Image (cartoon, rainbow, N blue to C red; front, side):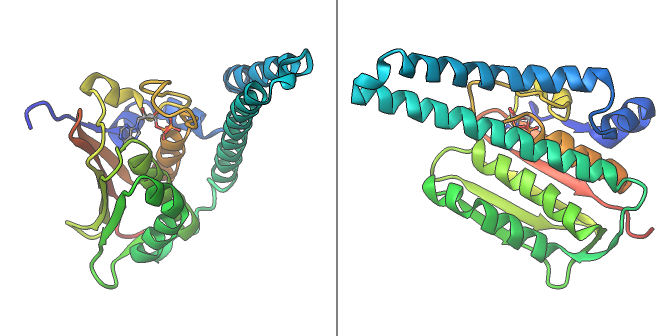
Length: 248
Ligand code: ADP
């Protein structure tokens, strides 16, 4: 395990409070608008090209038409994923002064995530296992805890090969839990960057990915004064550790 590395994003955030605060801001600064526009431009350009090619005659050949429509569907799904993630960011940012925390049952967040990824996991024969102590709670906004859990479990499924395993575990201490997978892992040099918005280790790895999931996780973690760290080894898997404060 000597290749493993841990990066504490909460410490990074503390070191650069300015950055952390700016990241939570909804799309009002020009950098953010430029980044979003850039991300939206590619799928829109691809859809335009595909539709034009179909209109110019490609639709006459049924198999070409089907292939192009499938590509169009993938691009539309990508746009949809982007918009949904942007809405989540807006919601998190909108609630930042009023995070309504309460002891939220971890098992409920795990159930929500497990149900949401059910289809995708079944398609790849990936099992999602929960090892949660009975009555275990996390002092958090329950909706935001659900979101954190969903984004981590979704990634675990997305970046794990067929037949793999995802484990959601409570502990070892109060307020702590982890999400692990035995998937492709993250190169050591990339780990410090994965919480940045729109950052993807390899854009060809998962076509439906937006690069926003972990930045949303980090926003929520920061809002709760919590910590997140990652341990990963390429081809072996990744574990995301969360530590939420016990009170407040
Ligand atoms: P997305 O998954 O939509 O690309 P995220 O912000 O959730 O965006 O993740 C950023 C990047 O971190 C991903 O593109 C992927 O390269 C990497 N990553 C995240 N979770 C995992 C994981 N469990 N295993 C391997 N790589 C991961």
